[in-house]
Length: 495
Image 1 (cartoon, rainbow, N blue to C red):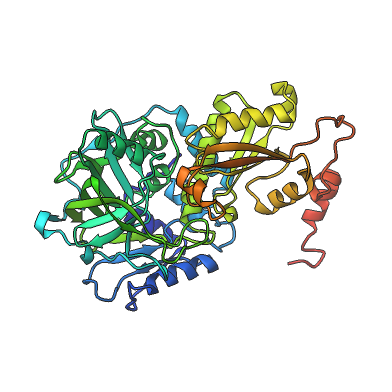
Image 2 (cartoon, helix red, strand yellow; image 1 turned 90 degrees about the vertical axis):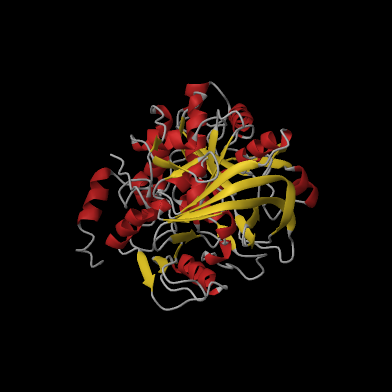
């Protein structure tokens, strides 16, 4: 049963109940200090910091750092992800992926419009707008500016109103009423922006910050074009998300959002954006580029609003949990839709979303009548041409005797099963996200690069009697001996 947490504050209360919130009443500086504390909390897998007093920011404005980071508590490593998705806090990676993938088989439920919501408790229009009042931090050293959006949802709609997209992309403040950020032409927000640009019109947008905790995960999930994320969320939850009409644009936003920023994304005006510490774990000091400008016409917010902030960088942070895990779930769904016997997909969090691991049923040869090369070519053609595969450069394909949600097992299987000469199968000139640090300049500009599938499957010429067995506790000892050892573990003197 999925539990629907209907606001960021309900989510914070759920985190407090299991010791995953660290309230900080000491005054902290928006200029780098908040970002450094968040980054240190990732490194230590500490509770999510909730900053209650921010230098030079009016009383009441707060920041929640690391909203979907990982935990050091035993058995609760993914508890923030699990609670965000309405699962038990001890849910496993496999349970999280399956829950998201299975929502594709539920009936979509559109959002429910309501007359008003808590996001309307304070309303500022046009000349009253001042983005600099908000507690957007300068997160990293060398960042090009203060980033307001690192975990919020951007709502955009096609001119014909047939598709409303909810997505996540970074947005930096330029001044009191302008912002700028990444609008990738191969991502859905970029595709919708291009439709408005073709009409010589700016694109209406609404940025909802501090939403219901499930929303960022689905906003970062690569579901197909013309599928509304809001309807998918309704299918996942089994009930609609409540939304309210914006003040100055014809869009709806979640009613309990902490902060909403409205306006239009220009079809002509650009501004310098970046650099920013990014999900691959690197920053490019001094490297800013011109991006489209968001012109802001309204800001609304709750009393004592809370801004969620992600300090992107080395794993593990939300780019890896709230982006990587939904990508794995979407890939699992799409490969199964092609009748492939895939038992699990996973993005190891430590890979910074550069690895996708696919586990095949151990009898995949019988079920598909493919050899390993035929299977790899089939998967490559499906995955690398899909929205889900756009940002995934490296795939590890193995059998399901490996728990692919356990990074230690993945590293062992990759090291021991992938042949150095024949184990790399390249797919040249595939669509590619521009951020990985290893890309050449022309690849970044062209959004194209080579991708690879690593063959970690059993060898095609092995007979059943030749196939090796894992030399593990579970594999090489009789069940009776295993149970005896486990039952007597403390008697042996272990604690």
